[in-house]
Length: 169
Length: 366
Image (cartoon, rainbow over all chains, first blue to last red; front, top):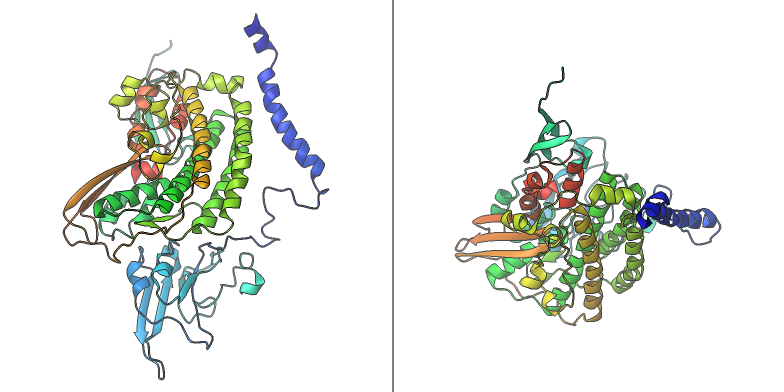
């Protein structure tokens, strides 16, 4: 008899509907009335996405205060890279004690963003910046170098409109 | 007039409920499954062979990409196998943080299992709710190591960095809200008549068969065998943790669901203990910059969310890369039990059976 009643009256379904109903009511009644946004999702293209400080984005080379490239071509990053995306050619410059890279190529299409290169670097010459929008129209644009007009190793790409806050650009 | 004929049907490789590129060859008599053969290999990348050509340090990034739903658990197995090979002792603080991250990962993996399993069976709401909580865990991952899914969180010998500032706040916020969320899932599913009809008594695998097939993880524990490597052969900081190994005796899909939910409760307990008893100290052991192996071999098994994940490494004298590397993937071994589970049952039950095994094809094919 009890089992029959249980089948007849859908208590279990009512229980589930209570939960979904509560959630619906919460959002429906509080939407646009609170000062604090209540959304689980973020309004990403309108509002720049907020990354954690340790976020691993695209590889970027750093310069010191004088505008000199920090890299000294020790090839540590090239050796540690699990997918061999970095190619370095070293050269010399007048008035600089250490070596200077003449070529620093980065094949982004193969990069797995593990940050082993940054970890191995003893000169803090490279970082993984906060850029996560990496899509480009041409495959060649995926290969970054020190020159490059569209995007190069020294700055954030123009495609990263939303991922990097203005002061970081 | 009516011919009685068996029909062969392919389930997959592009079927949405096979959780990846699994192909199952079925021989059907009407709607009853007479014969079932899982066909794998559509996602084979040769991870084992690649790792033999990489140094011990580099190999870790491939373990991320095996079982991409539980990358930290895979990292932990790899790191501990290497530490065993080189005889490195990891600092206690690093052990605690590893344990905590591993349990977070178990939660994330079980949440994604619950989401997809329920979605396969027809409960859409749970999918949205579990992904809301999983997002918090991925944020914790991102705060700790900078990546959400393919974490590369650990290093041989410890951790790369200590916990970031504000990490405890993230964890406590999650722990405060998660038990209520678990209750939500239970209220939605546990007594739901459709859920019960689709899971109770479906895809049974008794303890004897499970042991004979080498099945581990929640599938084995739902058959009443309390085998958990965290308890049986403690690694990381699990020896110091107080937790239970939930088991059921029904050995069906519903029992596995209950076991996994109970495991999530235990995981939150372990995380709480890790946060409370976090010791001070360094997080990285002193290790040489280039690891060179001796002639040696190790097998190290850890409890991944899906079952026992074992790493077998053979070292060569003076070599920087493993001579032989093999992974005992839990999904691969657990998938063996699929024919045993579904043969003789209805066609619709195979979707529940695949879901309950919690397979990830990245790990099965490697």
